[in-house]
Length: 308
Image (cartoon, rainbow, N blue to C red):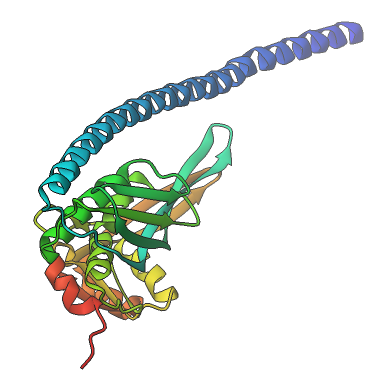
């Protein structure tokens, strides 16, 4: 009788172990398959981005070659006719607020999540204008793609229009230096500042180092909306700025309040949003003065140190 019990227990134990082993396989396989699918998806996204970058570079090179050809022709015609204007010379620099995105993976196995955080930072933006043939060049450190080139082209166009000067006999060189790579979505937000420093370089004006501006710029000189205002304001405050100029279309911002509840290995997040006045909120919570600007002319009213 005792032997039979032992045999039955052994059989039951073997059956239980077999069941546990078999049932564990799909879980492991499922996790491995999920990771493999994610890796393949990321590789496809990476390949698509590489193709897009290559196509954009080729398009940009083609456009640049055409622009150089026409600039050379205009320069030659003006030189032959004696109407070529004198090349402009000047330089200016100012810090611009920007936002850096960071992605952190929290947790392991199937219970993980990606946490995206945004942090404000300051980037050094400089411009140098030298005699040349109307080229607009951009140097970024680290490499940040073509977003700053688009902003630079618009900034140069608006600056020459505001100052009533010709770009034909001058080259404009923008230099952007940051501690980390700035996301493409945030590159255009330096457009207003790039326009400001170029106008300062052309007219020989002195920029107030305690003032900075964030906002896009269009061909008509209008300042466009941007994101990450609170983070940019904090970065500007930490850098010693006293006044932040923001687009008047950003007079209201949404403030998110995130709360988390943990149940075992699962984290449940909930968000509540509140819309507040930008100027009041930033001045009270961050401690830096804010003024709204709608056009580049509005920016010029605050940004220069003028005698008298």
